[in-house]
Image 1: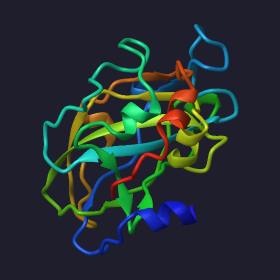
Image 2 (image 1 turned 120 degrees about the vertical axis):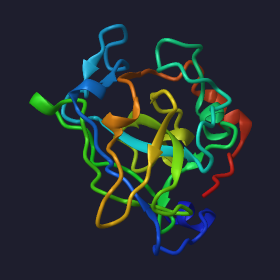
Image 3 (image 1 turned 90 degrees about the vertical axis):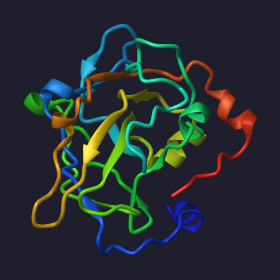
Length: 199
């Protein structure tokens, strides 16, 4: 995490836009890499972690498209991390990560509380994309280096609120359920060299 902190800019935690970092079974994330072709809701034993990408201007469309993972052209971590105007969502310079998805009745869901989003203000509308990957990795930077399984949602708009009145949760944004698949060519990232992270 030290390397990540070094490349991420420090932003004041004051006057941040707040949202509810959680989903429900209707917007579940599926493991389609443990047994390819047989998606498992949330994976076994909570083996999926999620993070957010966002663009400060609403209605932005990532360069790699808006199709839910598994329904569009396979993409790589390089394409995700270099996806147009999108960057990792951070709070105080740290990646915004949810709790690892759980198994059992709540499989495929997660709850990361009501975080603030660096560089935003209450009342802002931003465009977000949720990414998911194997929870064997502590953060998306390490997952990308290893070419870990990857999944991504459609792009959706989020109206941010304040500490006293948090904005909407992910279910109210039009986010769709999606699969996490093995990345087609895991070596692609290594061949491309380090990808600069923008915060």
